[in-house]
Length: 355
Image 1 (cartoon, rainbow, N blue to C red):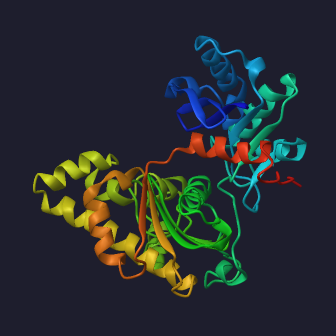
Image 2 (tube, one colour):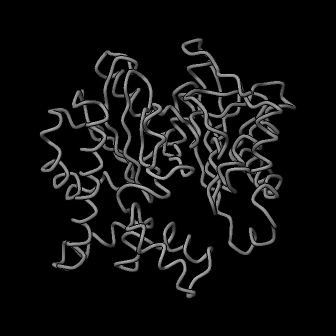
Image 3 (cartoon, rainbow, N blue to C red):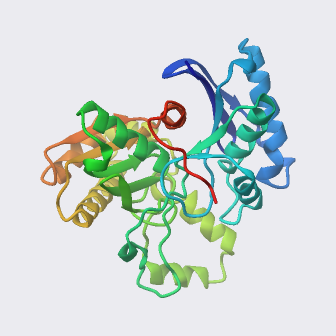
């Protein structure tokens, strides 16, 4: 029997859970005020503050941390890595602190996990960070030399649902050809071949637009906007990454609120949502070509997968690609982190060395 503490830092919250093997004992979402976080110069400086919040939460719930077998943190913006469960080591800690690929709250996952686990003489892990890169060579080409595509995606959730589906059909993820669409605040659509994610839309700058991200946009028009003199770099990145997509058209990122407008007869809101669904379907079709049309199943996951309207409309466009369309609504990253560490602790999978 294993007891695992799982930690998932977000921009203004820290989610945590304690599991006994696969059984969830409790989970909490610790909210951090913008004012509190504004006092730190960088995300890495929040480590001690957030670690204390996690330990206080465990104490509040009456959990003795000496029972823990391991601590698992969300993987951050590390160098390109193959999929797997990684033990946190000094090299990883150094890379997370330096944040060479960008500052992000997920960088804190491994740092906090290590600092809680080390005094207890137990291992700390990360699982399938956003930097998972299993591209085939042709996938890196963008069309402009020196501007290669990067694999940054919702690898944790997509890998977890792929393995969950394989288990349900008594097969191995390593045997399957899958197209997986993660539909959250960002959207990533990926092609999985024999246990590897061989291509994926980088949800930060590619693919379908989402509640807050623009996805792929006309590059010449973007270049003109950048040199118009009206905006600086930070403002342009903010428009693309935080104020694009549904928000740019409808001024809200709340998909439930948007669907209320659609259901009440708002024709413009419906057209915008239909356009997003249209783009998602195009990306799923594109990933089917990566697999040369050999698609065992299409998997839809993420928060927007709860919408019957979205799923029904999407199925109309992609049903010809595969007869199997499996829906796993939501994005239970805490469960996915727990499952990844458990596979290593139980000897079902070897941990991967971070070098």
